[in-house]
Amino acid sequence: MGSNFRLIIFDLDGTLVNSYPAITYSVNYTLQKLNLKKQSVTAIKKAVGWGDKALLIPFVGNRNIKIALKIYREHHKKSLTEKTTFMPYAKRLLIYLNKKGYKLAVASNRPAKFSDILVRHLNIKRFFDYVLCKDQIKFGKPHPNILNRIMRRLKISKEDTFYVGDMAIDVRTGKRAKVKTFAVATGSSSTAELKRERPDFLSKDLSELFNIL
Image 1 (tube, helix red, strand yellow):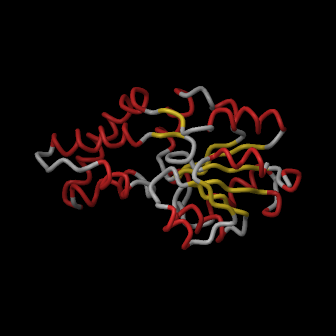
Image 2 (cartoon, rainbow, N blue to C red):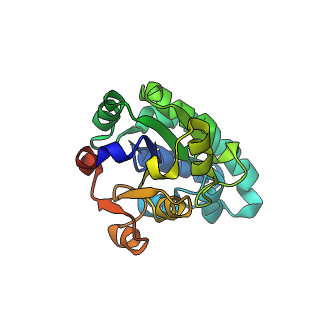
């Protein structure tokens, strides 16, 4: 089956990397600085996936968002390198796919600056042919533009592309781009939420990809 695909596109947070401790730390640091109530890991995790502005607005409100973003981004540059780890099987999978000759890419709603910090810190930048983020294009996920741009850039068709993500928004993005989607229940969306989106594949972790690809 693996021969059907040439390009594997990954979401980043919750899919390849566990950055939730870093995000939680930075969000609560920001709230503390603004004299606002700290939030639970669960509440923060549920807000992840739409970019840092959308992450913060439910907790700080529109009126405080400008200063909140400044505090958060400054703190997050450091917390990312201190508190981010790989999701189970992620690094081994990237090594495996690289050896198999697949083109690999990242499509993330995280700002490019922080995605770059992540992939450099974890020493996986070398595996990716292209990393594209929400702030580098007009529309982020679930708009299909981010996947379409990657496919055009790498000159690979929809039929030869496979998208891997952890959220309902990722499955929607893959479907709108008309590519096969693999949903992994390691991030912000529950298994039930992912099932409702009807991905082509659904698994509790990334290990199943060794069989599919």
